[in-house]
Image 1 (cartoon, rainbow, N blue to C red):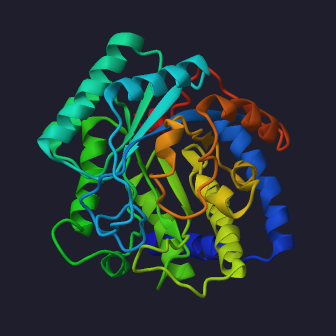
Image 2: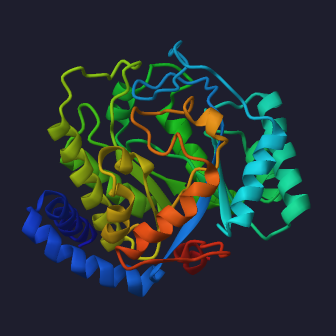
Length: 354
């Protein structure tokens, strides 16, 4: 009976991802009601701080991969990080996200710990902290949790092990099992756990994406961030023949993934990926309409944003951090949403699970 139930859910998810535009429009009205009932009508902002683009990994799809020698590498001084946190606090965002290329050396770990201590000392529990810093040891993750980080986003990129191996070099730095093990470790340590996938990547099928959605359900995540694959010119996956139609198809598929996930896991947090806006100016707002309830305005110092490009055509790299708030407020009103200012916006699923 359990296998039959899973098969029925899988068929429903496949239908969600392959329905035509008219069917999806009807489905959206149901998703909006479902989202309102389970996570409310508010969208929560997380001030995004792109801490460093130095990365030890060499993923075939990523613009800051170690093998890209055309990137100017940087690491923000702690005072610049604290300035970005202060901007988020003054803008009433409620939370920050600290994101960087993947490193686990002792110098980097200590650097993050110093930042967390400084944030904890200045703001106490007044601002939420999400980390997105890749695979780390149990000791490191425990230390960061005790210093105030309470959410952690570790994207699996694909839940299919064979596909994961096609997307990454075959070495110990790119180990699917290690990544999965870290997701379980985060749960054990008490974090709100997030993951996510690339949508429309090379060799990927709709069946793979359905399995990704089931993976989120089976490991019982609290939050998800996922977006369309956009090929970067300085990566092995760059395709010079990529057309606007290809990008549009991935964009539409990404919106359907958000809606399908909201149907499958009604009370988790789902981020509206900035990569959607790289394809369509209203991409993030359409993601909210599709079921997302988290947006991450960029508060990284403007001079460093151009160097943190995981994909080309990244939006808002020329804007100052304070410019985002009014723009996003106006855009969200167009899809009948308001912002939960000064609220942590934690995942309802996390507390239900506890």
